[in-house]
Length: 53
Image (cartoon, rainbow, N blue to C red):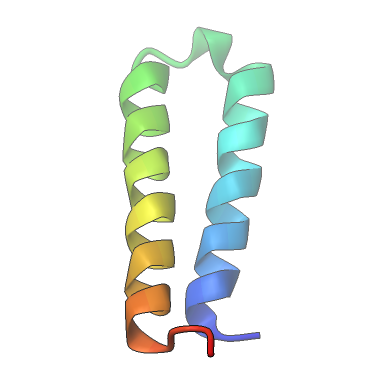
């Protein structure tokens, strides 16, 4: 598993737990948007670098 996929996996878990337990976090919406952008960006970067054949 590459480092990019590991970061995406950790971001997905972070987003999941933020949605479950992040109601008291003042910037939960902003953090969620940043995590989503990171997930999409890292996935597109990995697909652009090593496309499926």
